[in-house]
Length: 432
Image (tube, rainbow, N blue to C red; front, side, top):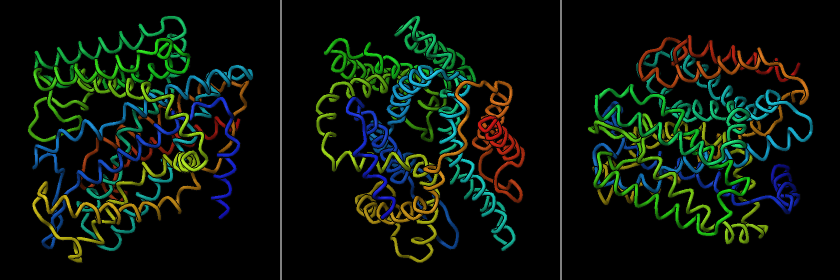
């Protein structure tokens, strides 16, 4: 009840000038990603677990990724909110470094909790005699959200620098970044070397984040036709690049594709991002009017209050669902992608939502509880940079470690060491 009262109070105290659609888009993006991940999972059990992604065995489902791949929306809203927050922080006399320390705190705290719990769970399972390979696979699956967090933390850390470029060059910045993504694609297509486009892991998400800057300062909304033009133009480009061009249909990784649209991001994903941005702008006014109603807005505030917790723990909820439903025979195992399999997705989603709700109830307070606040006028540059480097290096190493036996902790020990050291340094920098 206390939490509900707090949420209601936050909703009631929302400033009149706030663009509420941005909060709605953030919530919708994360809920859609969670739902998409849960729907994509298929599992079989015959004394042991097997499974994978339905995209690999039912190719028709790859078209659905055009609806469920909404991470561009999250980065767009991140840029919008980041620009507004940085402007306000500097208006109070704050520094770029203190802004980054404060802004990343809500991301790092729940992530630290997740990694600590996964490592402790792996140690406990190892002591109980569970197969080390199975532990490594389970922890790796639970840690899948770290892929997104690496890119997002990097982009947030670069906000002060990129916002300076935006103030000077405006929309030329995301345009140039998109061109560089295309150059990486051309190198990959001509040489067959996927590493040629690795820079796009950062460049593509920076481009979408930069669009958020232009949304926040009014450049994207100065012309009323921007939304329809971007939506229709982006969709037309997406169709041309995938149906007629060299890019795959799926907007997430799928087996058997020589080129993938997210590993690293491609021009096709940028076209999808443009279409989503245009659609968001197109419905902005009616969305904000609807969100003036207390009911919908309170729900949006509630979701956003635990949004990182829900995202970070949603694959753990899937693992718990697998353990509860498949060895017990509660959930049938029809062929993935079949009508019967689709029908059984409904109870599957409901059970996973219950597990996730329980996890959010337990770990949500970690996200909601404010950590030490940095002095806005001080700039502990060296510890801030060192801490963020450790966190990013640890997350990246954990994300690419892959399934398998990684020892007691279920994840590469050097990755965990780098992450926890970086998180500790960041906490020190925030409090000094």
